[in-house]
Structure formats: structure tokens, C-alpha cells
Length: 94
Length: 244
Image (cartoon, rainbow over all chains, first blue to last red; front, side):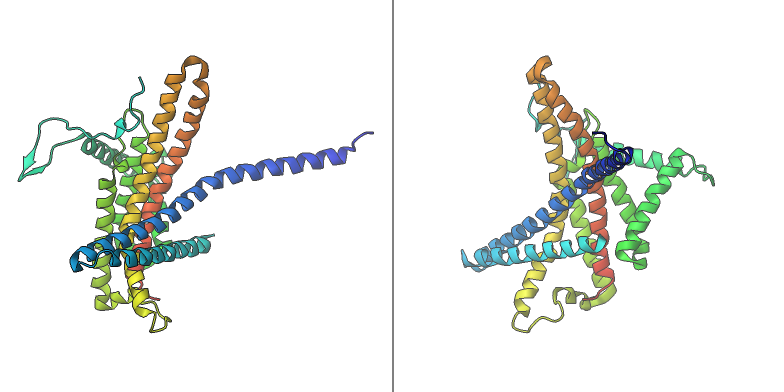
């Protein structure tokens, strides 16, 4: 059985398309890693700032350990808010 | 031997010790590499803009590319009102970029891999943006902490969350740059150590990893400078165009 010439050229074109696509993907992966890191630090920094504020307020008002617990959760909420905002912004850029 | 992978981050004094009013102001290797980066930027831009040809030469082309890149970034994210802040954002972007890139050279020191450097830059931006916001809008600037369309019951909670989110900006800005640079350089050093300890027989695999990582690190160095500058633009946009 012989493969028709027409099929061979079509296969070639399809293969080169796949190659191009994967090259494009690996180029894009770098920027995705950047945005993943961006989201991670957004979340963690808000939690850290919230907890530190809670800690400081606790030592001011002598209410250990209540405010640090409350502000930890508020910081987490702020972090999630940060992440949602950043994600919205990235979606707008696409 | 390869030594400690964290040793590259140690700061040591160069020259005599300078002590003014109990504050140690000695010239260190960190200061040296900041001066080197600033000098490279100045020389590069000076050479690039000296001849001002209509058909630009290589250096002029690159200098103009940086200019249009930053100008476009500012007008895209912060609008035309942010034009007066172009010099600041341009210097910031160039400084971070060149500090990162100079840090990629062997035997050099990466200034941006120290949290104190990035934190000071981030705090400066944070305070400046806050002052700009208050100067432009007065006490109305506080309305960025109060999003519209929130039920009155939830308002105190949301306001506290917004304030924490606002205060976390300098932290995330500085930690991102510092962590990226430090992690990347430590990884490079660890793989470099593997090459030596595995010797001529097994060292080729980590060596190829090292080469690939160097490419990735150059990408990260550029990307982080870009992210640092673009986030400054976004914060500036929040302060200049107050709407919610």
C-alpha cells in the first residue's frame, strides 16, 4: 500500500503546526510562572500583614490572643481579595 | 570546593569604615554594585541619546525601545494623567532591570536579592503614592477603602479588609522581587556545586541544567523588573483616577 503524495504533505503541515504550537507554549510558560508567583505573594503578604497588625494591636490593648486570631482571618480575606483583583486584571489584559 | 550557596549574598565592607552619628555608612559590595548599575545605565543612555539620528544606530535603538516600552506601559495602565511620573518610573524600571542583569554576571553581587533594598524601594513607592492620592483628592482619597454597593452591615468588615489589602502592597511588591532573585541565584549556585562534586563523569547533567536555568533567570530578571514597574503604575492609577 502506498501513501498518496497529498496525504504526506498534509501530514507535514500538521506536524509543523504542532511544533509551532509547543514552541509557543514553552514561551508562554515563563510568563505564567511569573503570574503564579505574583498571585502567591499577593495572598501570603496580606495574611502576614494582617497577622502583624493583630499582634501589634494585641500588645497595645492587652487582649492576647484574640485580635491576632481575628486579624489573621481578616488578612486571609484581604489576601483572597488581592488575588481576585489581580486575576481580574490579568484577564482584562488577555 | 563549591562552598555555601548562600555565601554569594554576604555583604562585606570595602575600604574604610564610615560611622556618622552611630549609623554605619560604610561602602559595601552592595553599594558598589548599585553604583556600577547606575553608571551602566547613565553611560548607556548617554551614548544612546548623544547622536540623535533619524535612522537610529544600535545603541540608540535599544535606548529608544526602553523609552517607548515604559511610556506605553504607563499610558496603558495609568492613563495620560500619569505622564508627569514618567521619569520616576523609568528610572525605577531601569535601575531594577540593570541591578538584576548585572547580578547575572559571574562573580557579581545581586543587589535586588536583599529584602532591605527592595523593601525600601517598595516603601518609598507606597508612601509616595499615598501622598499623591491625598494631595490630589484630599480626604476623599479615603474612599478607596470603602467600595460602593456594599450593605451597611458589612461595611466595617470590608473597610478593615481593604485597609489590610492596601497595607500589604509594599510587602508583596518587595517580597516578590527579593524572593525571585534570591531563589533563582541560590538554585544556580546549588546546580553549579553539583557540577563540581559530580566531577567529569556525572557533571554534565547539572551543567546543562545550569545553562537552562541561566536562560530562565535572565527571563525572570526582566520579568520582575517589568512587574515591579507595572505594579507601581497600577498603584499610581488607583491614586490618580479615583473611581469605584
